[in-house]
Length: 113
Image 1 (cartoon, rainbow, N blue to C red):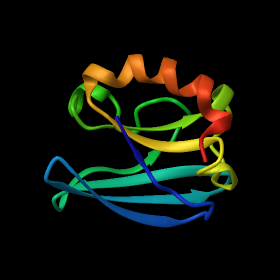
Image 2: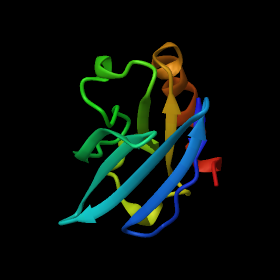
Image 3: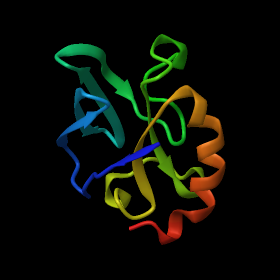
């Protein structure tokens, strides 16, 4: 698992290298929801996916089982950019660590800054 830094802004672009792959992530706030575009080395993985708390952004996760991005929130809160980096964090998982990691991360959310 890897935590990807996000800020408390409604629209943002993030570039991160994971395992020699450059990911470009765009988070966009519109009408009270957050959507995501994700590219890997210039190849589109998803465009305009609605970001739901504690769920894989790319659905179904079996499409890219070792490229699971998830916005983890405390108490299954609704995704809110005002809480990014406080009680809500963006994470990258492989399939092997996705289910187990959520059980560990969520109880610790209030102390993650």
